[in-house]
Every structure is written in structure tokens, then in C-alpha cells.
Length: 182
Image 1 (spheres, rainbow, N blue to C red):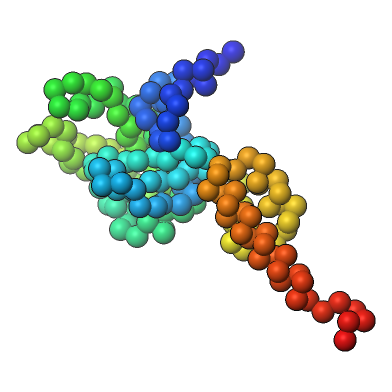
Image 2: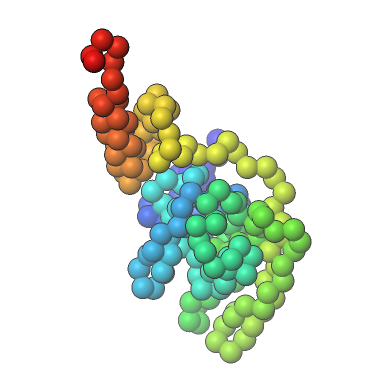
């Protein structure tokens, strides 16, 4: 029996303790603004309701590799791993880092801040594994059964988007002329 699910912390974000069992490869669903301390939330298809909140160094990795516009990140994949050497002040607390990214054609080596005044090389390799079946595009979906199935496993925010799309489809269906209504 795999015990990693029994030791996962309860949180609204992916953190180093989630990765004790090993690296995970995830797909970007969307990127939204976060709080001041962690300014972006990378929402992941594989972790509904829990965002990856990259450190400043990992945000630099994303910008260098994928560009400055986060809309381009949707559907792209990354492998996250736990680095036990990450420090917060004087303490080693562990942190989440990126080891692989899709949509890059060669390994990237970047000099990133390791501790105050010190920099260290960080290498990100191309992710070569194929992506799973893409997530349902709620905004363009016209299949109410697909929306119903997606709703069953969606987080609260996604459920609201599905409800809004269903309401749009229902309203559009009411305005369609039915044979004999002329």
C-alpha cells in the first residue's frame, strides 16, 4: 500500500512535504495572481484546489524557459521535486524546485540565488514524456455530459466555472427556434 497520500499535508498549496515520495510531473491549468509574498498561483490539472506557488528563483526559471506571459503556460508540463537543502534564514526547511519543463529543446543552466549573496547553478532539463489527455476546456465545451462528468471531480472554483458555462448553454438552447414555433 502506498502511504504517501496518508502523509500529505492539508493545505491550499503544493509544498515540499507533498514531494517526500518523489518528484511529480504536473500540467498547468491556469496561472492567477496570488498574495504579495507569493504573487502567483500555478493551478495544476493534477491537484485541483491546490496551487503551486513558485519561489522567486523558480519564477525566474519559468520566465527564462517559457517567457513572461503566463497565458502561454497553460497545458505545459513540469516536474517538481523536493530539495531538502532549501533554507529559510539559517534553517534548512526544504523547498519545491523544478527539474524538467516541457516546451524547451535543450537543458537550461541558470545561476540563481542560493543564499543571501551566493548564487548556484540550477539545471532544468527538457521534459520528454507525453502529456495526458488535455483537460476539458470549459469555456468552449458544448457537451453537457462532459461538463457533468468534470463537475464531479472539480474543485469549488472550477465547479463555479462549469455552472456558469451550463447556464450559458441552457440560455442559448432556449433561444433556438424549434420546428413549428414560427
